[in-house]
Image 1 (cartoon, rainbow, N blue to C red):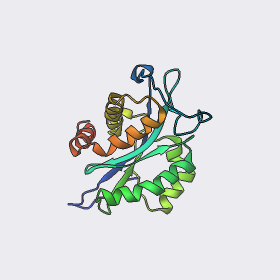
Image 2 (image 1 turned 90 degrees about the horizontal axis):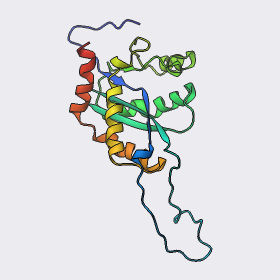
Image 3 (image 1 turned 30 degrees about the horizontal axis):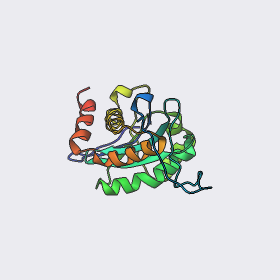
Image 4 (image 1 turned 90 degrees about the vertical axis):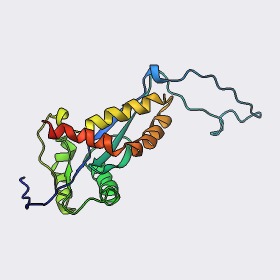
Length: 193
């Protein structure tokens, strides 16, 4: 697909692939917890402290950003397929476009993952009037969100999550903190290639 751009028209891109963050053994806290409890209350939810055994767990997240900053971040539960991807887009893209104050000329950038390019998803994008940017296959080095995933992993792991629930919460806490400069630095990858 070729985009026709009028002179003096600025196109804003909303980039949106998903990433996976995990917990490794070295990031776990080794802390003992002692609890005072009454008889027959050992398994009440408020007393149980969730932990991760044997090196961790992971959380798959979807996020988007534009030059004006980070958009929404969604946690993906279970397997990601075309239907799940479309649900994430439906719930997060338009609100992110509004929050980021993008103009009507915004274009969605996604990689060529099969769930992004399936006939089912392509038809959904067309029906919902979302323009997409053509993107070469197998080009993670050109994808600026990869740098943001790397930065997110660093700040989340610095907080040393000890279980998947903490990992998920730390991702949600840290994502909105990405400053305009971090997003701008990630976008320079495209400009310098």
